[in-house]
Amino acid sequence: MRSWRNALVAVTSLLVGASVATGQTWQSLTNQPTFSAGAMLLLTDGTVLVHAEQNDSQNWYKLTPDVNGSYLNGTWTQVASLPAGYAPLYFSSAVLPDGRVIIEGGEYNNLSPVWTNQGAIYDPVADRWTAVAPPAGWKYIGDAPATVLANGIYLQSSCCTKESALLDPSTLTWTSTGAGKFDVFDEENWTLLPSGQVLTVDAYVFQYDATGTNSELYTPGTGTWSSAGSTVVQLWDSCRGAGQASYEVGPAVLRPDKTVFATGANRCGAAHTAIFDTRTGTWTAGPDFPGTLGIADGPAALETNGNVLMMTSPLVFKSGAKFVEWNGSSLTKIPGPPGLSSDSSYYGHFLQLPTGQLLFTDFSSDAEVFTPGGSYDPAWQPTVARAPGTVTRGGTYTISGTQFNGLSQGATYGDDYQSATNYPVVRLVNLGTGHVFYCRTHDHSTMAVATGSKRVSTRFDVPADAETGASQLFVVANGIPSAPVGVTVQ
Image (cartoon, rainbow, N blue to C red; front, side, top):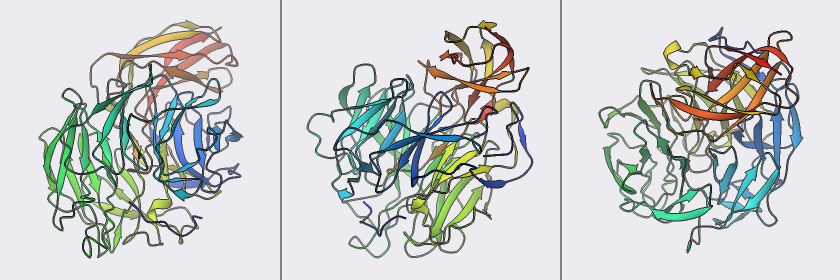
């Protein structure tokens, strides 16, 4: 659990369907937020829900791309605030299969360190938050890892115990799960695997072991945790003994090659990394971060080119943030946006956008868009097998194909915030004007990752203001679009 800290302080025009970015760039939003922007979630209609942090943490805002599909030139609107008495900082978060958003817990509530057990669900259609009762008997949720499982059920943990529970979004009922957990969930990061299991690296909170390297897998079919073996190198920070260790551990990202790149923290020097091969179930040591860099809480994101972008900083909670990229064989420092010399890694947040870019916030009123270099492998694209040839504004339709959920959850952070985007987004582009309209998707047939040739589907609502006429339809997963499908909008 992090201790109380000092006060915290898109693109050129969209090339719809293009697979190549010419080079890495950072660009400031044309219309910057008027609040301190923090946690972000991609709504299924292509807009971005952003949390105000920290003194305004009951409030949320929405970034809407412009008519050309540009987030760089997008506009901000304030949406509904959380229920009275709930203003969390550092919490669990997810977009549910029906398009609603859930947040649970909070390390702080109204800036008081309380490990709250409150929660709420946001309905973007109604623009309304509704309180969610905690699992029976839970005193704490706090800042805890969570994820949506392949079957669409939401898995939530408690920060400070070995308790976990499943929430059925359709009934909002909780069911206890997760027998066999080795340690409490505090500081841990969860990664959804192609098998449907959930991987975590243990942080040994409340059971210090100076050389501990255990990892675990949650198996939905049995509802139990079991060891996933040693990470070979220690990823959590055990420096200076049980009383002074931060227990922090970095994020872990599933890549298209089905390896998980897991990162660490270290108060005593360079942090380690490790690689989990999901095909063999084995760990190997990765390269250490340069110098004294590491990720004691902080963001990482899968780029559309398959690389992993990370925000690091020296030791634990120190300023001097640096951006590092993993390409599958080496770590390389890359330039970051200006003005981050006072940032620590925990300030940062990444979100994968439907344009293939990453949106970045750092508790300030400066939001940046990162455009990765290189291109995606065409084998990673969603494919559309069945789609309507004609759609009517305001109508709802079904579309099916493969790889609608992408090959990964996209961006991640850890216990303080989750920003998975493993669900389909549907984009319409009018052939006459080039204008872009995102459809709201919902009722996805799966939330699994790397589904291969399995046929999957989603429902989508055509916006009432979509332009009529000949158009192209794209299904986008983690920023990678399908080939265009011709459609007429009436």
